[in-house]
Image 1: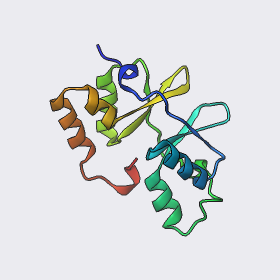
Image 2: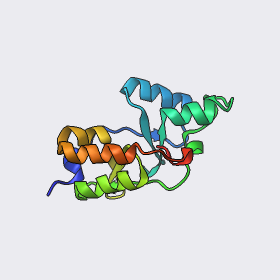
Image 3: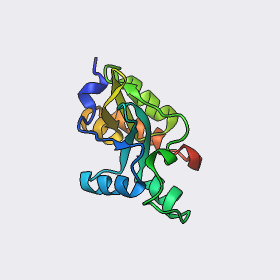
Image 4: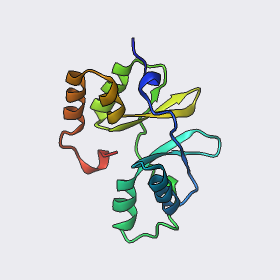
Length: 145
């Protein structure tokens, strides 16, 4: 049985909830990634922010990325998976909620991120095709992650 811990990216870094969107964007650039988990001062996961969130919900709205805080964009129900969960459970969550990146938790702390790409590199071609198909279905704008 394969578990999420075997597939996830382990060097996930958090943007702190009180950091600005400009700081989050710089982190994304420096880490060469398109999303960051948002963590509170106690290290607990508070949300997930994407480069798309910054563009659509800050820049396109005429807001100042130097003033808007990461936590201001954390909304809705955050989805996550336990590091020791079966990989099929992670795939089912990603398919059900049409999300490409899923924070991985252990002992109430962020320990990694599992993405569609992580699964594609490590799983059967047929199952990856199904995952991509389900995640890529047309969906309402507010559910995108």
